[in-house]
Length: 452
Image (cartoon, rainbow, N blue to C red; front, top):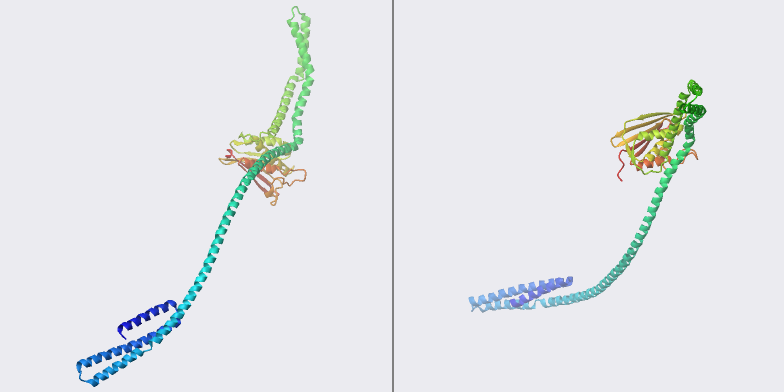
């Protein structure tokens, strides 16, 4: 074979090898290996033939007359030529071609299968895509419906919230009014419980007034008689030509009555009786004023108040409960407090009444103390040596309607109202109690009203 043919064979082999690698067939690879070995063998024979041809040409140039040598060289070159042409590359090449055809058929079949599968997959993807688009459209419609329902619900909710707000506002207003009425009712209840004791407190100064009026009533006829005799004497003195004997008799009668009154000390006695009546009336007026302060309805009025005056007023109101108990006043130097006087006085009265009820009639001791823990607050302590409050009850004493008193003797609102009043003033109501030793309530109030 010529070098061109050999190159062609090798190029064909390379193309076949590339196609075999592309197809990925093991059988084609093995056929190519056999073809490559055959081509290598044939190439070796071609090289030997070329070398023999070169030897023949060299012998012809060197010694053209040596026929035997030239014949032997030509015979060897002919044998090599025959071997090179007869080398079995065609069968190998056919095997490779058949394997390539088979591999190509398999590849085409597989490609057709892949194409069919791709069509199926494409159909499935299109179906999935269509389903997704349909679901998105459905979701959009559902979202629109949900948004419409949500807007309708919001509108309905806003209407219901507005209605509930009005109801809550009305209920709050009624609750505040009920609370105010409850506070006033508790105040009136407390005052009603003290009426029996206050009646005795009023009777004592009233006895002064009654005795004074009865004494003055006895002296009125004598004073009337003296006034009549004096009037007649003045008439005689002013008349012209009066009788000297009548004048002397009238002077003697008036002098005699004055002497009798002076001898009995009537003038001094009348003065004492008037003073006793004025004293009794002043005490009655003081009690009435205290009651008026505690029964006032101006619960929202705020003023600058001296708490000592409120404490004294509360002590006067509760005098009948404190009569057998000792009360110690330890008033410190405090400033005026901006508060509602009637409400704070009610707190003091409730705490003093509770202290009186908690202490024994004999040996009971109550201490009322005032101080300023700092420049912005005033503290009022009301302590007693009573039976104290048990530890398990202490956390509940400010709860509404909670009471440790027997049924019918307490409403359970006194301390709850006190706590609420003090809290509304921006203050604090504290309690410290030890069973068997006594209880101390501390009212801490700000000097200035809290910002609202």
